[in-house]
Image (cartoon, rainbow, N blue to C red; front, side, top):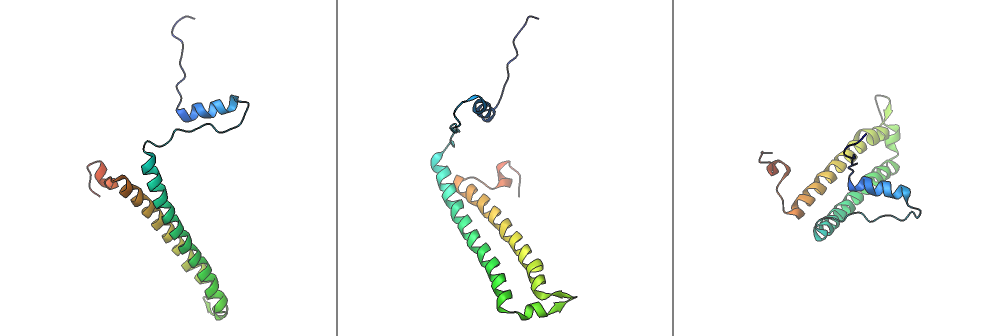
Length: 130
């Protein structure tokens, strides 16, 4: 069979992964850096501050809930529909609050990245409204 030879096309990440499998030493290969390192540093620092605030808030909710239940043993004796109020506090208040904190964190991180880039909002980028 004669003719043109087939060429395998792969992404840079695939080439790195394939090269890793053939190498005798297992050191990490350098990955391409961000296009704007200074922007990446600013975004990372701002998102790290957001993560720290979120972690403190999560700890306050979790330890606060535990502390409240420990400080008020009457919550174990009070029952609503046969279920102790302390359990309801954990299930019906804590988990939805944790979900709201997580959603707020993601939203804040995305807004921080957009603000640091100096870009427009997600709906304005393609010309559409939000």
